[in-house]
Structures are given as C-alpha cells and as structure tokens.
Length: 520
Image 1 (cartoon, rainbow, N blue to C red):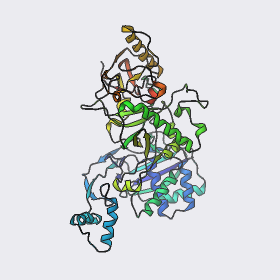
Image 2 (cartoon, one colour):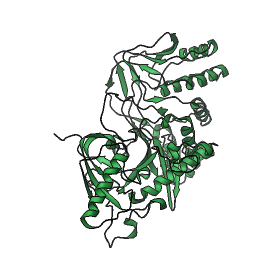
Image 3 (tube, rainbow, N blue to C red):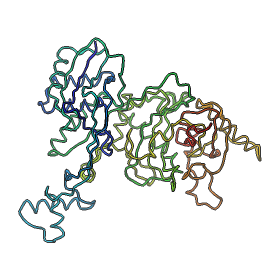
Image 4 (cartoon, rainbow, N blue to C red):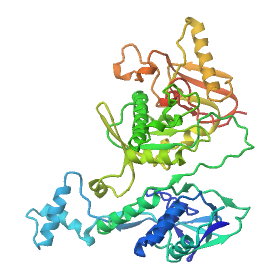
C-alpha cells in the first residue's frame, strides 16, 4: 500500500521561494515545506496529542516521491513593505525600549533627533524594505507525494486526514490549497521525481518549539531552517571518471567574525572537524563516531576507506579576486548518505545554534550558526545547501573538465629525495599518484609550479624576504613536506571534485576546473 498526499493549488499559482535571500521560485513544493504546513495546522487546531503522534510517525517514513507538472515562473516587480519590527543600529538597542516607554506614557524625548528616531516604532513611520514574492504557475495545479510501502494504522491515517483537510495554504498564505491524504496500491511509473529536501526525525519537535517561540514573542516571525538535502540521482550509464569525493557539499557560509587568511585554512578545517566530533560526544555518541567522519577506526588507527574532507571556499578565479575565504564545505565520500544520517544531523545540531533574540532584531533571517574559536579568531559559520554567493557553489569545483588547477597547494605524500631536474620529475610522479589515489585515471600531464594558475590563489612558497604570515600553516601531523601548485591535464573529461595529496582531508590540494570540456 502507498500513502499519498494530494495538494491542489486553488488559484493555479504557488507562492514560494527557494530561500529567504533569493527570488527563485521553489517548485515543486518540497516535503519539508509541506510538513511545516501540516504542523502549522496542528498548532491552529489546538495541538491535539493524537495529531502530534501522527506527524511524528510521518517524519520517520522514507523520503516520498513527487508527481508534479512543469511550471512557468510568474514575473512580478519588487515591492516595498514596512519592516516587521523597528530596527536600530548596534549599540542603540537599549535605547529602543526607552523610546517605546516614552511614547507609551504620552511623552516626547527631549532631543528632536531622538524624537525622529522614536517614530520608527510606529507602523506608519517604519522604513520600507524591498521584498520579492516569487511564484510559479504550474501546468497542472495538483501535486502528489507518494510514500511507497507505507501503511499507517486507522487512527494515524484519520489524524493525518483531518490535518490535511484543514491545511488552507502551503508556503505563503496566498498559496491557497486543497489537501487530502489517500491510500493507493502503487505509485505511477512515469514522471515521478525525487525531492531536493526531506523531513527528518525530530523535525516536528523543532517546528513546534518554533511555533511556541512565535506565540511567546507576540507574533515575531521565526523561520525554520530547511529540511535535509536529498542527494540527486546519478545516471548509471555515465562512465565519466570520478574521484571518490561527492559533488554534494554542505557549505558553512561565513556570517560573522574575522576570517583568517586562506593560508591558515588547514588549521581551521581541523578545528571544524574537532567541533563536529565534539557534537557526537555531546550527544553521547563518542564511542561510535563513524570513521567516515573522524578519519580513524574505533581503535584509533587511520581509516583505510575515504572519509570526510573539509575544504576552504575562497574568492578566486574572477577578475580582481583576492583569495579571501568566504566559507568552508564538508565534502563526504561519493555515494555517501552522511547528510541524511540521523547521528550526523544530531551532532551538527548540537554545535550549530540559532541566533540570539537581539541578533534576530538586527537581521530577520533565521539560520543556524556554528561558532568556532581558533587562537584569536572567533567565527560564525552558517550550514546551508543553498549558499548566497557564487564562489560558495560546489558546482564551481565539480564540473567536468580536461584540465584542473590547484586553488590550495598540494601537500606531497612523501618527502623528496632527489635534486635538480630529477626533483621536478619526482614531484610530477607524486601528483600523478595522488590522482590515482582518489580514483581518477593517471593524468597526461602535470605542470608543477610555485604559483597557481587560478586568479587570486596565493603562492605555495613565499619569497625569501616574505613575512612569516605569508607561509602556509599546517597541522602538526602534516608539517615538513613540500607544498606545490599544479596544473593537471587528463586525456578524457573528469568529473570533480578533485582534491589531492596528503592534506586533502583538511582542504589542501583543492582543484578547480579551468577548461570546462572545451578541448577538441
């Protein structure tokens, strides 16, 4: 038996964006968005215990498949609306309450400038901000979700049916809907598609806490973070050579704090891994951290299988690029299910917090942030699958190409033993072996160099008179071996990511495609 949720957009238009900072419509509706709508209905209906249990049951089921038609984006101009709350610059938040107290008593602040600023609490005087309302016009307004081989008991199905019947909109409140749960024998064999995001166990409790926070704050919007990413299906017939690294990355976007130079990125990558391992320990899973994450077996020896790499994402490969780091990415092994693993998600939620109430008053975006402390650096990194900057897009590193060049230098696997021209040949041999070690064919040509072919990437070795900070900083276990940039050419197109050398798991040897299959 198959559980089916049918959603009809009554106006023929679906209002939804892929994220709070984008004007791109989100179609088809994703399971996490639909689940949020059902939880909102549960709250509006009085938070019935039987309905809560039904939603907890639903979040534990397999990822549903979606049947949805093609769509056309609806064009609409930007509009300007009053901000949800009166906002003040940093340092003036304490004054905000003072202004409101003055107005509540019918008094005016003594300073005319203070009076003008105080008017900002009044709706008619609030600053208007640009807003986009992206929308889609589907060819067929009916969308269906299929949970294959899923049969709820009668009580659970009845609770889900009532919730669906009372769900008047999905996404934006203007996306009016008719929803119903059904039971069918099978799912359609054609035009079915996998979602991009999924529900996870514990999602209901998170959303219900957000709902209570919304009520307690007097109606201040608390946007939940998106559901977990579902890796896209790959074409089994595609025989393009691939490394053992996955093209699906979880990006940690830099949001606040002083970011160190890219030459210290390997130290930060190790710090991020240590923070993640601490998340497992805080959840009581310190004795069962998977080697896919830690890089070590339970006995403490180095893992022989591929494991998680953490790479810096910098502003490079563009005119005037300066190589400053914009964030980091968690890169699991290819075909890994790490980002859907319950233990991994719990560990991430343990170390990634929500912004404070004061921070929400200054910025209405609701995103989890990971706090890191390294020497004198205090950083905030926000986990996301939809980063706001192009330089943070994994596609910039995972495209097919004949030629790749290093953004961060390769740390050679072994110490060099030869000198002169033989030394150069030894470097080339080690770089070719590094390609084979990650599952790629041996390249046709390797051109090692002190400098990178990528605009904005720092040199592997500073000049003799350069200050100490211009040298690459490495974890203690990796010091003493040569760093080199390289341009690498293959005889056939290769699918990235390409991350090479002994330091690949801390972001060294990160390569970027530079020809995009243009070779004749």
